[in-house]
Image 1 (cartoon, rainbow over the protein chains, first blue to last red):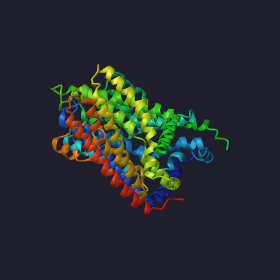
Image 2: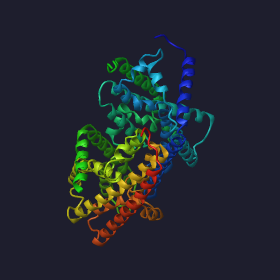
Image 3: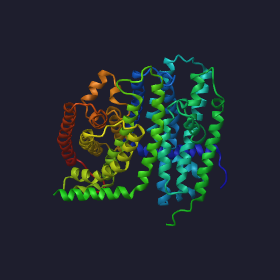
Length: 267
Length: 266
């Protein structure tokens, strides 16, 4: 397989996505209801925090607005995965049915071709909720705003989303080796939800687990500290963009190794 | 008459037991969830000046939330998903021509799943919680009322699921409809945060909604040992009213919907 340029892939991606969006738009009601559902779900998350702080002054020293900051940050970081990488959920089904073989037979990158097939519009509801919550807490906390801080925010959000995508890639790739791939996906999704809490409130075992094994501490906690605790930023916060890129690459290699092992179902 | 319904339930039980893998996922997922909420609520209570907040200590809250989680497992049998998929694939036509009402057919065939989850998830968790907390939950007449209340909660939850499943005839959106339902039920029933923590105004509104009858009612009957019999009977009565309301309204909604649907590939 010879290498193709980036421009070639961008062109192909836009073409495939256009088809997918066209086909989805025939179910317009589904698009509206799904996004509404996404927003309702996040509104409930917001209300949950609000209810807690109606009864308690803080969560181990973290203020209401700070908890919301972590939450909003994690929702925005979740968006790229939801929009662009949702096809991972259908990997297992395609591997078992044998349909996956179609991706192996095209002269383009297998991972790219598989992932590009679906653009999940539900992510837009997620993004809306995330921006609203982050903006609200940002204003309430009176965090200074400058071009530099916006740049750091974007870089950190980008890195955070790489961690989430990486986790889901690895979880999805499990199905190349075992028949219990579903378990890995369900678990990984469960952990995504826990990324909204500041990791500092957990005990040592969970902190270790969430930093070094299933790195959800990098989804919201470490990157947010730049804005919430600017006087005391840990080293891991600065390193998180670099680790994010490395982690994503690792997940890509695992996924591709699984795909190369794929023998089809013989039918 | 009742025999053919119970046959459906028996098949349901056998089908769920076949899926041991998914029971394992539930179990492992619960353990992680437990660890997380334990840590979160410990952090929340650590910043409180008082040990008891709204009449609930840290232990009370944990017991409540852990049991809420297991009730979620007992109740949640994906009826909306099954109905949505049956509508999409056209399989529903085959169930509609069966010689019993579709609602009863669905209820009794999914009841098997509830029963298995009750014995596999709820009972062991209940025993473990009671051992760890040194008998936080009194064992007496409250267990009897709890079982009645849980059964009523199950019926109410089934009717809500069934009504939402019926809605899928109109929308072709299963994911969106289901997530709205799940979010509303979990938040407004007190499954995520006990209703005791809701501000008074909010709590009043929630008390007039059917959702609190699903989690809050059975859990309070189980955990508040000093609750007067009068209160218990009153709460059970409210549950019965909701069962009646949903039985009639849900039935009407279904009868209207079934007349105007088209099922794919039928």
